[in-house]
Length: 120
Image (cartoon, rainbow, N blue to C red; front, side):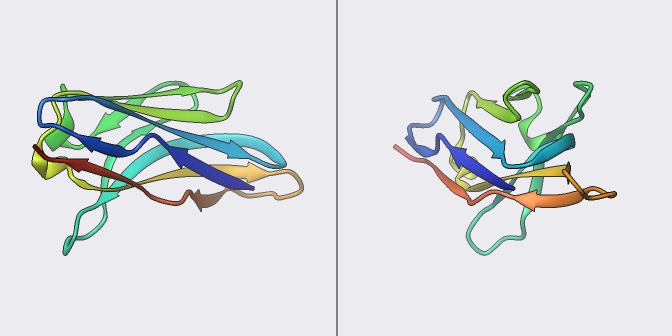
């Protein structure tokens, strides 16, 4: 099982980016999927999460600007980011609480980070 994130890059303040993260491998089910970020010198923080049923949760700092969604058929989670600010600059990591085939319990898997830089 692996998670592959993509979509980061350099964007000007006020711009938009869309991150994607696809889970692949022998997956029986995926529960919660989420995005975290870690800025230089700071701790990793939860940005947004989404349940298998579509319930979402956001950090206060991104509410109204970011939207998390998922495509269960593709085992993919997205993070649409609008009105980006310099303080959104960070490495963004996706994760998924999932159950591989042959495993009785869920485990948390992480994708590699993708860098988002907001700068003029």
